[in-house]
Image (cartoon, rainbow, N blue to C red; front, top):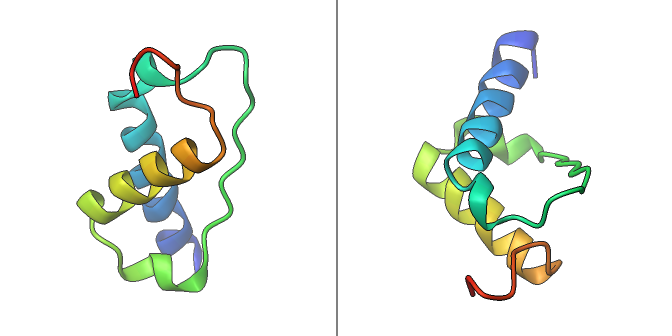
Length: 65
């Protein structure tokens, strides 16, 4: 999408991470590649998707799960 859409998706991902930063393993570089369908997504769905993908890839601390 255009820059407005890309920046909105970026802000949603960053805010989702920021609010849950304490449950992620430290020392990792996380790369998120958003699909075109992410342009219409709500914050709640973005947060849920980020946490779900994090669990699948085992980048959440063991004692939190």
